[in-house]
Length: 181
Image (cartoon, rainbow, N blue to C red; front, side, top):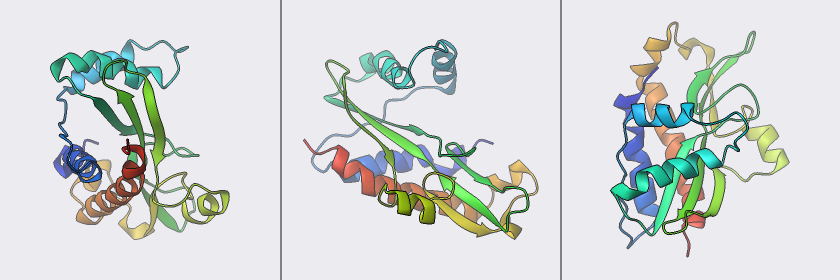
């Protein structure tokens, strides 16, 4: 389901701005159709890192930047990917998750400078086992909040604010380290 009304793109841009004080931060506009076309043109044999880089190179002529910061959906260690809510069969909890990956590219050469998953905790084995059961930023919820239909999730303020809080926390923890000169 589309969660465009949750204004997550604007939230990401605001967190990049907060992590890069004194720098000009602009969002490069693109359409969902452009993104879908670029995804379809990717070969099965290409590396996953090539796709974001090629998309940045495609968008770069629109705005010339010193650095390009790409924040995109990412998969955890299980079936969850990006932003959503899941409930495994017979589980007593549902999990709200917001898993993103960050890549920073040089604005002239488009070489990858840094990359990392956006995490709220340290990326150690005990932390992953104890606090990241779905493989990334997540929060256990009472199963009663799990929506009956996917469309019910979009209008749920608890889910919206939970995703926004996790996204903010993970970006605020990860971005400053990645944007240091």
